[in-house]
Amino acid sequence: MLTAGPTAGLTAGLTGAGPSPTRRGLLGAALGIAVTGCSVGPRVPTASVARSAYGDDPSQYGELYLPARIPLATVVVVHGGYWAQGFGAEAMRPMCQALQAEGYAVWNLEYRRVGGTGGWPMTFEDVAAGIDHLDTFDTVDAGDVRLVGHSAGGQLAVWAASRRDTTPGGPSAVTVTRCLSLAGVLDLTGASRQGLGSGNVDLLMGGTPADVPDHYDVGDPTRLVPAGCPVACLVGRDDEVVPRSQSDAYVAAARSAGAPVTLDEVPGDHSALIGPESRAWPTVLRRLGEKLRT
Image (cartoon, rainbow, N blue to C red; front, side):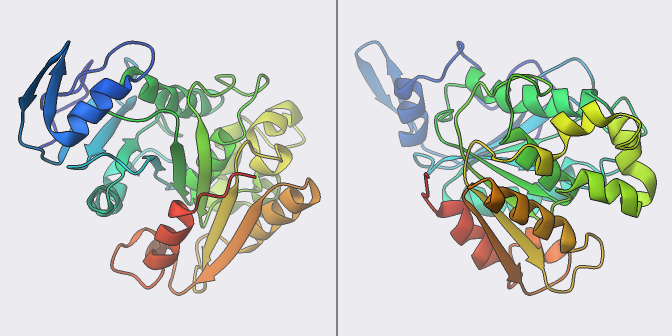
């Protein structure tokens, strides 16, 4: 069960350990055995979920879902809601549970948002710190991290896949191998001009592209191509929340930069992309499981 609130470490028998994960701890946790020195004892393998804080703010936490097996990879899930307070990580729990059942370790990331203590650059710093926090666990593989973001979370996920010296939080401390944008708001410059999210783009970025061009230079995924890993963009055929042009603009920029990127149109509306029972879900799983490393 989830703990009542953020804690400094994981509950349910899981602990953060050291600056990097140990394969011994990961293997032992996944196989259901306790490994201490040379002694090995049986332990019943069970799936688990627990909450861990990566900062002092109430919104700086994640929920870690572990499968009852050696994880296929570590998936970071980032929720949407046009970056607004009032939309939170709970929206992604059905997806997290489905990915956990598929054999992935899943980190459901919460962050400070517009209308609360978020905005520029805090929201971006939180996403960077929250992803880097994976490197403190000995129960996940920080060498194969796959990012999945929905809507505004798609922007944050693709941005996180594009981190470098100049972006908030600096380069990633973990190895990101793949990124999925599910109906992502990937062209912040265009989104600001179109007024998407009732002005939340400008609230997130601290102004318009004309006001703060330096913010957009290091926060807009379309200006940060190529990303550091392959990016898969998925859009719902009946999406009326985020226009397909947002993904089209990113894909065009990425292809111009020679970056590995794909674009799939799938059945359903904006929410179908995060629904494990939807007809879009098989495509999400297929793109997430691909091992393209070009």
